[in-house]
Length: 338
Image 1 (cartoon, rainbow, N blue to C red):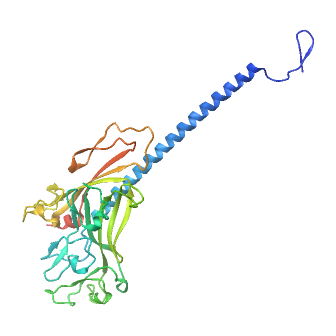
Image 2 (image 1 turned 135 degrees about the horizontal axis):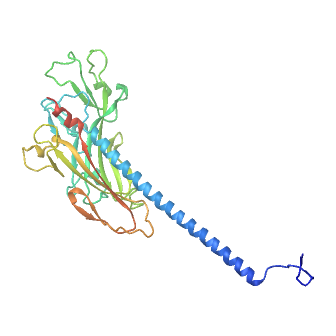
Image 3 (image 1 turned 90 degrees about the horizontal axis):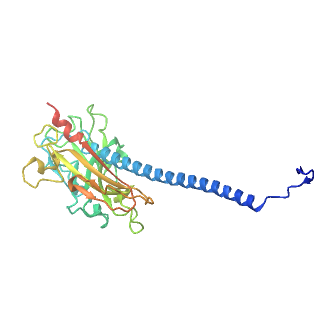
């Protein structure tokens, strides 16, 4: 209750229309400011999440490829004196087709590659979904972990003798098999069974789909020889291009003297032999998993090495190119010894 200037009592029964309109206007302004801030925060959070996923996928793809390349050509205790290197079909699960032989003495090379212009074996093409113009790489090695002889079945394993009494020195002292009974060799004490290691053949390539027939997401995939035959596994979504250059050692010092996308094609030259690859240079192009509203790529050209500067579509997706040079330790290391 209030008292008027004229001494009469006055009562406030509510707001006038003007006061109500002013209050509503102020409330709407507050709501608009809060909504704008919230929308901006949500948009920034979405942009940050997409960028984070892109960076995470990029780091994982590059790390996976470089780690596998560094292990390529690891064949345990094998001695390669007099070997003739082979580049067998990575899709064949038959022992006789995998490049291992006693007479003549042959072993598969740790690295073979297919440029974007090469026709690749069927298992690499992923039933026709390999992205045209992208490279593929086959990496061969032994598992760094040993396997008990009783479990050495289903896929090929290698055992190398370290015991002089196993066989005359001139005879082969190794076995490549998928039968436990074949692993008869011993360590240097001529008592303990020699290590048995699983043979690994993995091929990395870029497919136009993660789950083919369901989506069209470009994906880095791996084709591997397993007990079930050739198995293709999606690894990293968003990888839309892969280019690889191979560093060939042409003078035997363990250093790459020339980089090529494949063999030179000149018979008898060092850069026409996959066993002379001592380094790789890889270019990986990834796209963001989702379209970013309002995003436009001002710089639409990226450096993909052998392909030069490549124009990418302005489709609302962020893209990253990662480049790495990898030393192939198992091929380069022995060449550096005096």
